[in-house]
Image 1 (cartoon, rainbow, N blue to C red):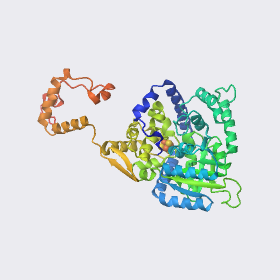
Image 2: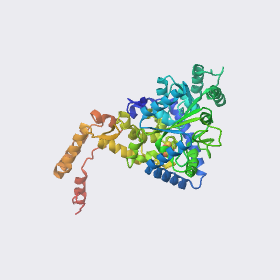
Image 3: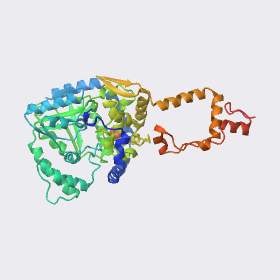
Image 4: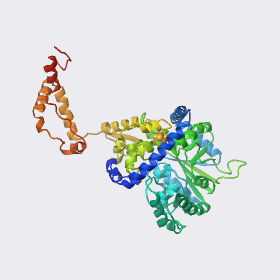
Amino acid sequence: MSGTFVGMPAFPEAAREAVADPTLRGNLRHATHTIRAKRAAAVAEVSDWAELREAGKRIKDHTLRHLDRYLVQLEEAVTAAGGTVHWAADAEEANRIVTRLVKETGESEVVKVKSMATQEIGLNEALEAEGIRAYETDLAELIVQLGKDRPSHILVPAIHRNRGEIRDIFRAEMGEWGRPAPEGLTDTPAELAEAARLHLREKFLRAKVGISGANFMVAETGTLVVVESEGNGRMCLTLPQTLISVVGIEKIVPTWRDLEVFLQTLPRSSTAERMNPYTSTWTGTRDGRAGEGDGPRAFHLVLLDNGRTDTLADEVGRQALRCIRCSACLNVCPVYERAGGHAYGSVYPGPIGAILSPQLRGTGSEIDASLPYASSLCGACYEVCPVAIDIPEVLVHLRERVVEGGTVTREGNKVVLKPARGHAAERAAMRAARWAFARPGALRAGQRLASRTRALHPRTLPGPGRAWSAARDLPAVPAEPFRDWWRRTNGGNAEEGTTK
Ligand code: SF4
């Protein structure tokens, strides 16, 4: 993944500021609760939701099992329709390919439809370093870009901003990016939307190069699909002469027919809509398809790996690749609701980010080792996931890897587990416990001693254990050990469960 988030502190530290910010928490609570309630109502309308969910899961699992075959089929279909396919092993290679393609057109600016894959690889920064300006055209992405901010939600990247903050960003920044914000701009939604529309329109009409991601790629036809709600995607996909799409290899589905499942589950799970407002599909170039006269003259598809084949190799973790980025799991997560998206240190926040980012990055960094713990394991994310990703199962699996295997690192193309030694105090405590449990007489003597001296026991732990006991009461030592109580009241042996 991109180096944008390299060096992020561990999740608890990164979340501390957000948790202490009442405005941010208020914005998040209001937005997530609103979307959550609407989604529940939209899903409840569908009588065969459970079957659709199961079908989505099966299609994705089948595709991932035969990913090599379907990717080759997709490449052949895209090439036959006049497009060119490029393979990128990592973020660096993908950025290099896209930058070269834009430079070859002679252009120095591009319009973009929201794409998580390009955020993942830090494409905008890579283009900027080469003197190419990328304009985000999704309203929320525009707010994030103008505010020199980072996205904090998959679907609503500016969810942490309220209307007043957005008005201030538009007033301050729009002039610098071309068309100034209208005089006396207020924070009413209609005025803010109109300001953004006018600001973007001239960029759409001027742009010669468009960059997109895709929600789905159909192997049998070579068709790419983008679903969005504002129409900006349609403009980016049809107006520019050159279209470059950067897409993760897991976004493939075998057949056109498979879309019927996801085009039902995705809109209801994400925006709580029965149908998506704009569903754009395109296949190759306008000259590559005889008899059709619209679309780009040149089309490039950059297929991005960037940690996905490593993730696919993990039997438990691979289910994260089923994700269709609906964001339903974020909106029900009690941790996300309080911490917000920035603390996850990735373009993929919330529960899906907690299982996807550590696997894709494979860096074993502080933030990646802490993300599997950014959950209460309540299971709400699994309940709402339209492709039934068992996020709690993967979280526990990744916790095991952190504890037992230490950190997960990548060397070249290989994922490597660095053995953990654990904390010295924890290791000493475990050794002492093993010694005592192997010697019942010593254990009994220790328990009696602990009971007799119970008045002297501290209520908090010393050293590194202080953080644990600061938020919890240490359990009180009983006045009499259980075994002694059993012998006194039953006259038998507690270990053997006998009575007199
Ligand atoms: S994990 Fe499931 S609920 Fe979360 S974004 Fe992905 S598809 Fe949606």
